[in-house]
Image (tube, rainbow, N blue to C red; front, side, top):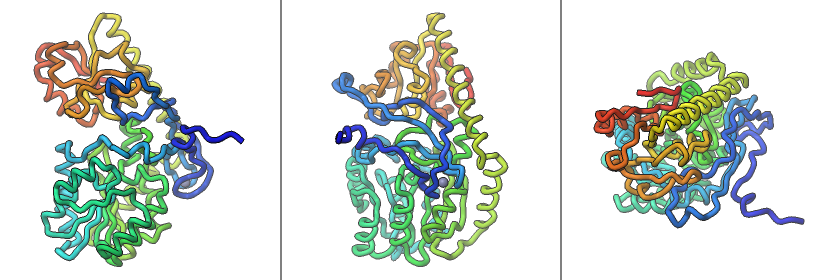
Length: 421
Ligand SMILES: [Zn+2]
């Protein structure tokens, strides 16, 4: 008998659909073997081997959930997570508005416990705390939990599961509101996760969560948001099935522009909520079907479009290089690195990547080893073109680099279709 290699323990193939359990899965997008794009490298890491894992999305013909073909061990992905909620001003504003809206809709009081799963650095909970409600966070990344604690937010440093839920009920009682923003896409055992949420909610409690919306992924060609942390790509249809299987009633849904287009779902243990929830839900379910997102052929068409984007971008960059143009990139995001690695764009085509996050500066992108530098490089070693890797912040990035533009610099926007501005 041969023993499993360490890589097999890190990476496990998906055997059946995460929601309906069927094996009727069809692969539609293959972004190739991909390294873990959130592991930024120091100069001493550059000589270490970097394992690659399949990055493929499968479509379930039965419940219409799109999901990665493999699951990477969460201990590897989240021990020290690089994404801080509070760094993005847009996300802060989103959190503040969300807290205000929910406090009003649910009439939250001082006695109500508000629990957030994957509370990150406490960005969202800190707004709820200002209303005087009791708040509690659960966050597995030690570095982020520490930041939240330093803001005076009680935080349990663990992965969410039934044992955490039981401990919360025993120590703090049941929650009136459970929050989870951008968490469910990261969860392998979705049913276990939802069952644990149900067990921690009061009978009149509400579970509110946000996920990136698959409709936007498809319509805006956001294929670069596919990376190993994102296990599922949700339509409303499969989410409704998952909620109902675990004792919830889907009560309302809203769309938001955050993170390239997300939906917020509100689920209860049986009751309805004030407002037009039933109509909102039906409208999105109908829309998903009208867009053809219940059939495999739409996904295959999407994959052809992605392959075409890759072709156009690489041909364009190579043509610039032949004309001796210098090209740099802006925005050392995880999705930026998915794009570069998928397209095979590296140091042969790009000089460096500018990023405004101090913690990333001085480090290197995994895989292509492009150096990540501060904005001052644009003045010191000016490129002719700047490839914008964070398409959700194009306006902000153009505004930040006024001098580069005034000196005749041009921008390349790769997604949803190649544009030069
Ligand atoms: Zn399914």
